[in-house]
Amino acid sequence: MMLINDSAVIDYSHLITTRPYDVRRVVISDLHLSADEPALVQAFLALVDDLIALPNLTEFYILGDWFDAWVGDDSYLSLTAVEVKQHWLTPIIDKLTQLSAQGCQIKVMHGNRDFLIGQSFCDLFHGELITEPYLVTIGNQNFRFEHGDGLCTDDKSYQRFRAIIRNPLIKWTLLKRPLHKRIALAQKIRQKSALDKTHKSMSIMDVNQQAVLRALKPVDVLLHGHTHRPAVHAVVTDKQNNPTKPRYVLGDWRVINPDNSYQQVEAVIAVSTSTELEQKESLQLVRFMIKA
Ligand code: LP5
Ligand code: MN
Image (cartoon, rainbow, N blue to C red; front, side, top):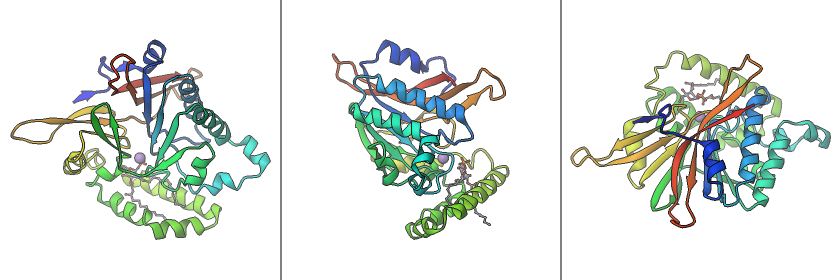
């Protein structure tokens, strides 16, 4: 396994400044954006600014937990014009709209915290809501993209909760409830989840190897987030012959020095590149760091 503090991990700024023409796709997850963390919001806006400047970027993926909690698109769509102007999401929508206008497709996947995002919200910036698992070919490899919570099958209480809350009928019923009730319910779920997590071991909250093998079977590479343990794993798929397939894990977005005036945001994201000469696209994890 290659851990992400390995010095071999490429620096994002170096990559986009030295090879701006080569960058084709950017994949991120687990930002947990909210009005309470302006540094993360600023970091996301800074990333999108960079992406707008990349001449050959074709796809930008957000693989879940873009938001800390999403209680329904109407939380934004029902705002008055005055409220929209002041809302923290408005600059995000504006910048993403600019990115779409440049010809970059924006693809948004649900995470466990924002599974109520709808296509109506994504329409605001001409993005596409995609479902997991999402299969994509990069170079000559078939990738499976997913958020990652579905792979944590040892976390029985979470999986029970997930099966209930993601049931289409339950989702529909939840969305019918008044907004203030949904906000209150989301708060209760967060508190209960935070408390429950203190009793769970790290291994229970990680992916299950059998689930990983199942996911990898029809593809060449698995890429997910959720566990907040960025790494590149070589998964042994056949014990006899010892062949391996890669499992890329994206990192969550973190504010470094939160109590300090010099705040930085750090994340591990994935970037694919292809030189115009070689025309062979490949993906790698890179360290994204920005002053907030
Ligand atoms: O997100 P993370 O990594 O911290 O934790 C997850 C699992 N927890 C969750 C819950 C989210 O963190 C918070 C949800 C935000 C709100 C979403 C919108 C809500 C919409 C509903 C309103 C319209 O997904 C956590 C996993 C962890 O990943 C690692 O994989 O362990 O799972 C849990 O902790 C779940 C608990 O084990 C079971 C929770 C039961 C909640 C029951 C709700 C009770 C409500 C009380 C009402 C009186
Ligand atoms: Mn998650």
